[in-house]
View 1: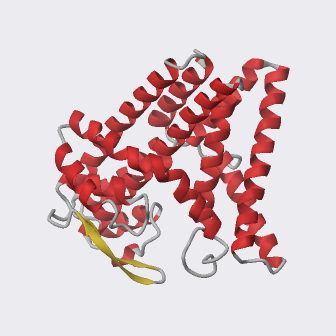
View 2: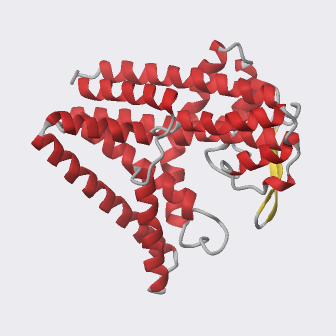
Length: 331
């Protein structure tokens, strides 16, 4: 368990200050390529229903876990330091908080400078909506919503499964570190598949059903925990924590997603802004309900505020995770 605590803390610091590494053999990129090839094979075989989508999920999960376990055990057997460095590399690659901040900063700067077209271009790298239909408020709203949602998907959920896997490995006599990384890998595969094929429109309406449902299930608990974690972060940064909690309790289930509404509604209340509303996607306009409807439209100041809340919340979540792991009987 000591190895897991050390690697998790180092990986968090590396991600927060260096961001996500960019190179061809990034684990998530390799997973994405496997998903693409698996999808192509299924469609070539005439399989594109829900059953085929579930088969794709199981195949990618099994193949990825088998590859990880083989390489990890081999490296630890040959030279334990190499194995630990490989584990650190994976843990670092599975956390995506620093990269999230890195993408939103250019959006803030472009909006502040009045360069709407440039701000739309930077935001397009983060969202699936039609950015050309957005004004300044729409760009800022998209940025805040993306930060709130991806705080869960890109950081809190991987962290949650790292801790859960480590504790399970501890109580079952397995390697806490290896089990934790397996749990993180399973989540990241589900998240990546959801972003690639988990759409409700053609041609993924049926093929992506299994990936979307698995992602919803795996994010269910972390999304609800995010309200309390963001509450702590808002307290530290002197945000309107109680208003965030009140709006979250009221509006969290109004979102189309069973999970995204929890962090987004809290942020709307904590910043006294409104999120959601009509949004244009490639397939047309979606009339989303307003979260925090009584709030004002967000600006670059609110994006900066949510960055600070999320950064503080991340430190809170990491501290709590390390304490939980440190209190386990395996340490």
